Length: 257
Image 1: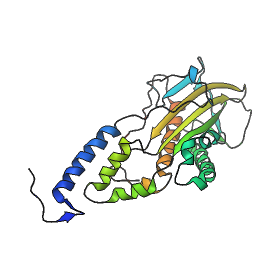
Image 2: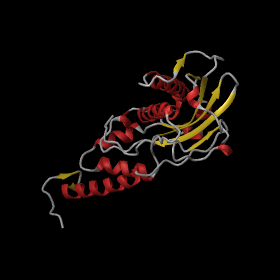
Image 3: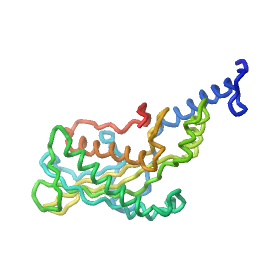
Image 4: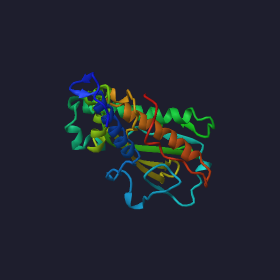
């Protein structure tokens, strides 16, 4: 039994608050270890041909048999499709309903830039980023659609900074209710000289759990973090040796930003 503290916080004893913190932290720790569920296919890729691959970090993939991706040395990142994302009814219930189309466009531009930067900053410099559509040989074209984006609940997340476990408890409630920021994509990789699709991928990620985080205090910080992680994974996947595994993103982070 814990002794009641003299100082109380909003009617809760320090003892009870500490207990709430312990329970909440245990709850979110268990939940944070869970991988995101798959998003419903939109038809941007052919889901019938796709399947999980334990060597790759994405939920569903397909690669044309016999294709040597090491034979390509240039890549063009097409403008990111956000039309599927705008069709989601969940967006209509969001906290930024009037800004939906503007937000979607900005997030599409961010995604394209993130992928380009990841390839340009790759120490191996295997792929030259082409800035305009081309039919040059040995060139891949990455066509990507953001199919789901759930923004952070900024006002609720701000309450997460309340002391003594109240904020942690809110985090636990959000995770139990699946009230988390998430992003999903579908992507096609095309050989520009033949016009043939040589690979497809799809993935959905929810925000990483962090004991202390400022990401949730802006609408799309969680989404942008996930997109940046995908960009780095694209580079590693295309650079990898045939027997090399590329791990998925961690579900828990200690970084507050």
